[in-house]
Length: 342
Image 1 (cartoon, one colour):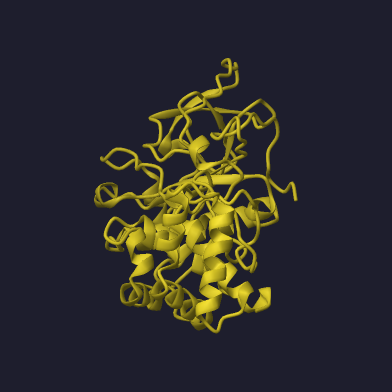
Image 2 (cartoon, rainbow, N blue to C red):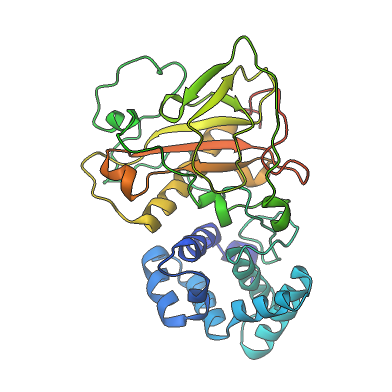
């Protein structure tokens, strides 16, 4: 099957990540064809080809085979090739299709293939839990439920905005939400899973132009640094971070900050929030940098509301770009903005 056939590959990858990340479902759903079918019908209503292959892979227990091979000490890439070959021998799908779906299952399980490749490729695609993923349309998404998304920028930091959505940028009574698990498994990068668990900090001396900002004070265009920024792990966002000029050494850059849902919206559930956050951050990256993040060495961490902060009025999404390396999974030092660099 040609690469162009998988026109909904990115959405399929997002959906698998959301399903595996949801405590109500988890990785076992990848081997439960009925449950997976029910979920994918909701997540991918316009992607019958991708859904069909994924359901067939669930029926063939592809994810279980992958997990068993890796648990026995097999190299992940070898496990993918062996599982894909076995799947191809038992179905009518072409080998390239079997390689694609097996790779997507591996990615959903958080297995690191050590290769960076677009989601639509029929070849195995590498990923590790250190970045955000998926691409969307140019600019923040707008839907009937979300008539507008008011981004917060450096220029608008002090300017009052008289919209219902802008209210969400004010600090709610509850604590700041934790790092969304979007970057969690829905992260594509070159760092091994084991390395991503390491807490490696970059300690940089304070600058006279630095500012300590809270989560709700951060806006698009802020560059940040600090030993408390652990972007490759899924922890609560720091109480404050050090914001500096993007021409000063830093480790991350805020490229989207703003409400993604109206205040009147009822809590849509963790899965819906995760999927929306992925879409928001990927489309915002394309708008901010000029290319999809998958075409760059950068990855992102995202912060989104949970049930508690939502009840306090939080509707905010924060998208934070950084450049992970094997030695610095939380981001190596940068000295310029990524805005419009591509």
